[in-house]
Length: 403
Image 1 (cartoon, rainbow, N blue to C red):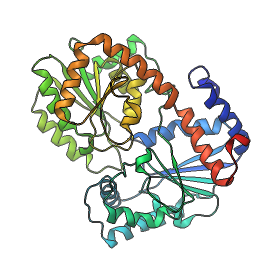
Image 2 (cartoon, helix red, strand yellow; image 1 turned 180 degrees about the horizontal axis):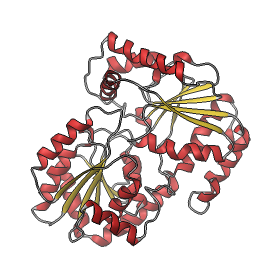
Image 3 (tube, rainbow, N blue to C red; image 1 turned 90 degrees about the horizontal axis):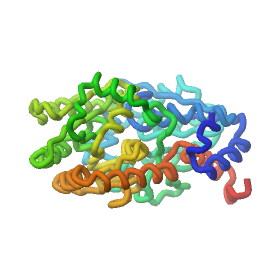
């Protein structure tokens, strides 16, 4: 499988992967998160596990189970880590731990390396058996609510290392810290090249008109993705440029607030026939691929963001993206070169009109955007980085160059 990336992924990444595969051949690598569908973490794991296995590594992916109360608590933890003042009582923390204790009894945690994704399964470290344990924080923790962050630290500090997506998310911790950006898989259904027939079938089925420019945002229906701000920006643009707004997203099983936000978005759209709101079923990858390819302007107007893989996805399709200047988005968008970073609704509207009114500039920026993703944000690079962290933990003081 790894050979399929030859000619697409950078040659250096593929060469180092082959060397690392030799080191870890036959060894076990376990990933644990809280959902198999919805959100970037699940998407990455769906593609990464087969790649690891193709390298001869015994890779597994387990998903913890929890009740409604558990996911309400972990959503509060998530929001607090992104800066909201949330009250997590000791009883709530105890429930968080108890659900993980139950999961530890049902999940085989015996592996040479264990990578735990985000706060939901964080307490599993209390039940570690052997191997190197790594906590992977995908959340924007640049300015967390300290009470919750410190409480979660009781678990984080028991890992051998912690991985963040962006350097400014890292905190002073008495342990190894690594910065690894998420990635996209160029061969996946969401990112592969589509035929004109496939694109036309999708837009017709979803009822997307192609007679006017399409403004698109693909994201969960989450207040931090600012869908209401996107609608406000669209309404400013609509006064001067006839266009259509498409807001597309899928539900996530670990986000209990999604349905409430979707209802609010529909009410705010106020039956505008040119605002199309799509709640796509999980694994609607080809639909999202087609939408990103027909869009005239792609947005990711986040107010908080761990990374925002939808930015790299659209850039891979040759689209300049307008994104909120938060989290990992500035790592993907070189302002004025591969897209635009914005800080306000008014700024978003201005940049939308700039791209709509200058199609040649948009095309050139889109070409640069695709190449930037190829060099920096393809999944082979992320697999390389995860294996490099595993190597670094087991070989303290020994350079990976010595492989």
